[in-house]
Image (cartoon, rainbow, N blue to C red; front, side, top):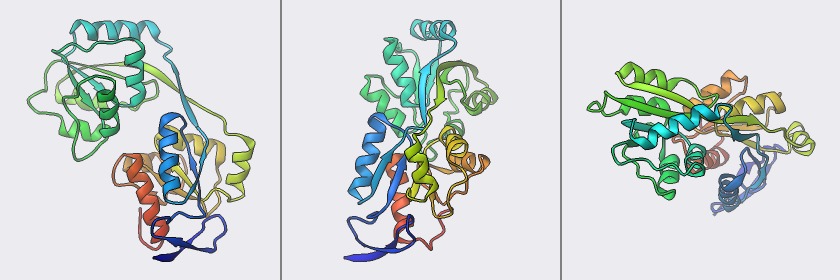
Length: 272
């Protein structure tokens, strides 16, 4: 079966098959590495041409002494819980050869983080089911576990949602900067392609990415589709001054690409 989809780069109609609904689309993927490669492969499967242009990267924490102290306490069993919010934090744990003791429970924000922990050999005791976000984790936190010490190793620019939310529940929460999130300048070629409308869609996977898109690439052409991974990221994107066209239901790369596909095949539907 074939049908018409709008090519956002030209405004013209493309004939696309049910298997290749993003044929003719060039999509900016804002992160590199294994994640970027995986998303690029998914996009190609739908007929799109992925443009991998990392907008953020991760660097060592400025507070190495504080991180070493917190991880040392974690390994000694001083914390009742450790909350992991990203695969990058898992990388930090692995690089420091951290062993999480059996008496410390592990919470993960989202299935992606949970999978990263499992692949690294760590167990996962709690993952929010209805909302894979920091707010969802606080909302679904087991009410039988509202006492004790909790370690939250996150990016240096992480919002205080988890710290304030879990503290409000009655937990003794400690934040430590596990790594720094830094912006990465895009190439002149990518910037020119965005400016000229040759990039049909931009995937926005976090507030940090949204702020880099706004700082480096705005104003975006009216034809450029901004697709955000979940409502929280959409909120951050709007706060950064971006017009949001697509919001995925779940905080996963698969859900984000599927939402973009749905928009391409049914552009009159209300995504936001």
